[in-house]
Length: 80
Image (cartoon, rainbow, N blue to C red):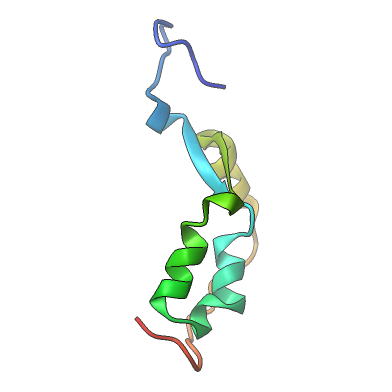
């Protein structure tokens, strides 16, 4: 919920709305990102067709419930 700008509990848009990746970033990293170049990773991360606006609180809570962990090792095709 975005509060009315004149409400007592008003917060700025940037503090209430974030963009959720429909394909979790951790899954992309583990399956593709750690084997790809920077441009491929950047393209995934910034693909607005696969982002959905949502309330900051819900986005943060959703990420906190995820159990996936980032695999640290990079593989063939990875570049900074």
